[in-house]
Image (cartoon, rainbow over all chains, first blue to last red; front, side):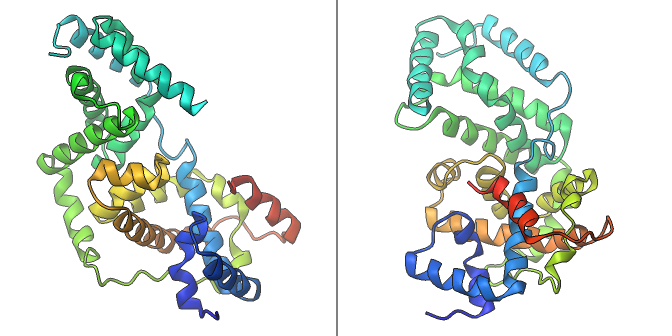
Length: 83
Length: 218
C-alpha cells in the first residue's frame, strides 16, 4: 500500500491513538520515514496534544476545592440527598 | 489499581446511599478537576465553570440513587457536567460569541487538512513552555465548533477513552473518532503559527528531538 500526503493526514489521529490497522500503519510509517512535511504535521499535532494534557493549560481557580466542599456540605446537611 | 478504585467507589456509593452521606466528599474528590475543566472548556468563563462544577456535584449527590453500576462513576459525572455546561452555554452570553466562528466550519464537508510546515525544525522546543502558547490553545479550543469541542475535551483534556466519550455524549464511537480527528486538525492549524514563532531557532540534534518526543509517547 502506498499513501500520498493527503491520505497520511487522514490517519494522523488514528496513528497518535494507536488505532491503525497493521497494513495502514506500515504504510503510514513508511511514508513518514521519507516525508519531512508529514513528519512535521504529526509532530505539531502531537505537540498540541501534549500542551492540552499539560495541567498548566487548564488551571483550577484558587480556593475552588474548598468552596466546592463547603457548598456540598450545605447541600448534604440540607437533606437534599438521594430521595 | 483501576479495578481497586472502582470497587472502592462502589462500596463508597453503597454506604452513602445507606446514609453515610458525608462520604460523598471522598467520592468526588478525584473528579474535582475533571468536572471543572470539562465545564470551563465549554463555557470559557471561570465563574460560570465554578458555579457549574458545584451544581454538577450537588446534582450528582441528589441523584446518586439513579447511578447504575454498569457505567463508570466518572462517566456518569461527566454526563452531568456536560449537560450543566450546555445549559449554561445556551443561556449565557457566551453563546453569542461562540456561534459565529463555530458555525462557519461546522458543516460536515469542511476542510480538515492540517497546516503544512515547510521546515519542521522551526518548531522550537522551548515554545511549548510558553504561557502564551497555552493561552492560544485555550482560545483555539474555545473556537472549535461545539460538537468537536465536546469530543476534544473528553478525549484529549480529560483523557476518557472512546467508549466512555461516546457514552457521555450519547453518540457512537465512529462519530467520536471523526470529530476528534477534525478537532485536532483544526487546533494544529490554529497553533502552528505560534509554534513556529518565538525563541530563535537553535539547532537540535535528532537525538534531542527524539528524547523530547519520547517523553510524551504512551
